[in-house]
Amino acid sequence: GAVVSQHPSRVICKSGTSVKIECRSLDFQATTMFWYRQFPKQSLMLMATSNEGSKATYEQGVEKDKFLINHASLTLSTLTVASAHPEDSSFYICSARDSSGGYEQYFGPGTRLTVT
Amino acid sequence: DAKTTQPPSMDCAEGRAANLPCNHSTISGNEYVYWYRQIHSQGPQYIIHGLKNNETNEMASLIITEDRKSSTLILPHATLRDTAVYYCIVRPPYGDSGNTPLVFGKGTRLSVIA
Image (cartoon, rainbow over all chains, first blue to last red; front, side, top):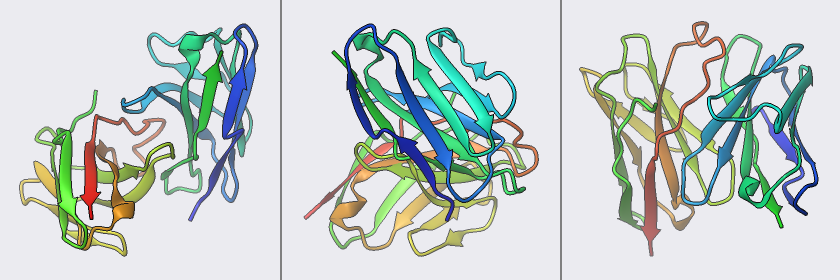
């Protein structure tokens, strides 16, 4: 089956620093990728939709200047958490949609961000 | 908002069948029912999906009622590794999906007990 990877799997950073998370579709092309955030004991919440070659679409309440998304190729999208604060600590999950026509959505393993 | 309703939690004895219900009374005629599960600290894993007919694969069976307003995911012989949160999701069909992402509700936390 289609594989989506995320890097890093776990990151700890100090408050005020920026963190970049990569999402890659390993064996298929994805014109659309999605970024979700999950707090403890809660469900996945969609943050933004990332489209290759264009600006991301953010969900209501998600700060686009804080969560910078770049989808520069058909296999890579990045999420940068700018000036991270402890309240940004969460589990970030990306998902990629296969562009070949099936439109299935495949999920990455997630990135655990802890801001101290 | 999620278009499905699931019980928050269920227990199942190891080796027995786990039957997870889902209500999707507002489902449209061309929308599919998808099931994913999430094991602790991992990304969601696809299980099965269906439109009208019952479906079966190596992981599970999906039973959809004739009126399509509800469905049941069946894990025939639950193991401890099946302990996870199970999400029932309604989504548009292929081609009409566009940029529509999967929307997750609260799911059902299944605990398989030895």
